[in-house]
Length: 434
Image 1 (tube, one colour):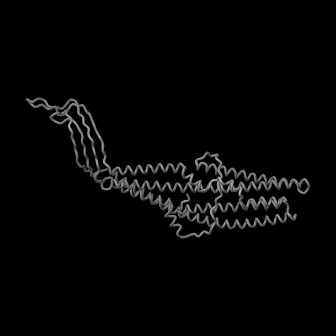
Image 2: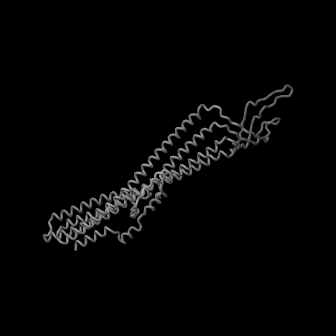
């Protein structure tokens, strides 16, 4: 009867029940967690602010095409008032004692040899760089979520298996204690069973502690109180044959945000060089001013309407070497960004190769662990038959039951490793997982 109970407990470890499915109905899915993190994480919100700032910089650059209009007014009192004396005619004031003027002024650039257009292009490239950074941030956040998620999946399942082991051991302990009362078992068997229960409970304590840490980290990413209770669904990637392709590296280099950002930074620095190169270009502009002021002969105190229109040409002649040194600095920035692009390329290649190898290794481990599970299951079946025949002791049967449980945990870990490796491989190829 006791062996049948043990068998039932082991069978429960093999398959999920309808009750378990109902209990996990409200648990969190991987995609749901990623979506919530991306929607609320401070780094994402900061990037949105940076995008708004980039839009403002584009708008500021485009104002170079628009006129500059202002209204100016002034009042002044001078003394002594300049005068000129003509013999026989008396004295005449050259300027009024109180001067007042008001005018509306307009200044419009007519042609600046491409300086404004290059500034606009430079601002637009910087805006694109901010947008690419947002995609990279989302991918990194998704990877962090994936790591925490699968760690929690494993720890949650490990807790279940440890609970089942403890239940089996406690059932066995009651069985051994009854045998001891009849003289069919020794105190040593009772003590050994209690020690095993204690060891499993210690293992469970460590697992719960690790799970608590992962829950705290996930709550932090979700922006929730650190003690919020979380349960995640056991979502594993489907296991299928993996066929590596020579085109994967090219795909990764084309799709990875790191490569796009490195290329964009190089393009931005090259355009910055062109912008600096235009700083000593001539500028042709139109100006107009109209208003009222006094000081006109013959009545110096009378306000009169006035205007001035014209064009201006500004040709920089000497800038004390500022352009030369600015261009040198910009060229070093270009060279540095090109090195960053090569470094990013090498990093992408390494990550693709590494994660491809991890996926293949995880596949092999799944096959090996499933073979070990089959062997452990058969060993348990044989042990149960031997126990019924009185050939082995309860402890030997329990050893096989424990071995079967641990093998199932190993199979789960290999499948989790495969899921994690496959998602990391997709990230390495530049595929979005959010």
